[in-house]
Length: 283
Image (cartoon, rainbow, N blue to C red):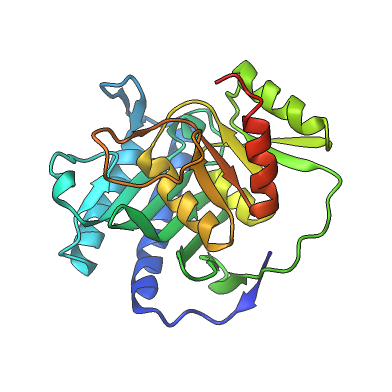
């Protein structure tokens, strides 16, 4: 849970917050324009995934702003050239619109993901949720903050002992039709009732921070910019994100930026349940 607190005094966070808040306003403006039926450009990338004018506009803005506040740190963005990325020991990792498909289907569960990668590990994470006018932000070694753009208020994650629940909340994508998900849930249901919570993309990581999802299995590929910020935030509260081989993801290290599937969990108790269930899925 999050409780009211004072604004952080960290200079880097205070520089990033207004930039991400403005980027969120740009994205929200584009979303409203799209939902109103106005002219809106949607293209297809080489991998056949969609890219919209909103992706590109937010990407352009954030690249410019990050270059001004951290000129010596390159940006590894979904929508930019990353051909020199293996030369970078430190970089920003950016997804200017995580949940493009949610956006196109007029579901408001899309985010902006930004993280700072150092020696292949996420050390600072931000997920902004434009339609809720909030962002989650924090360092790996500290409990994260939640900031409201409209209220200009700060909250901080508080590690109260979790109230025992009658059910395990499992996060799924709207398109989770693979039978492996049902296998996974069937195993958990042998010991506990399951509440299925469908939501878009990285928005599920925010729901985990809010205690609305306990375990998030993913059996189809993602990219590094989809998971880096969420993984960092989960790790900062005692949770985590593991590959299907039970190894934490590292970043900007492999030849490909594609991830295989993963299991994300909110705390160590959930981790045990999550991995036990995984061992019973035919991968």
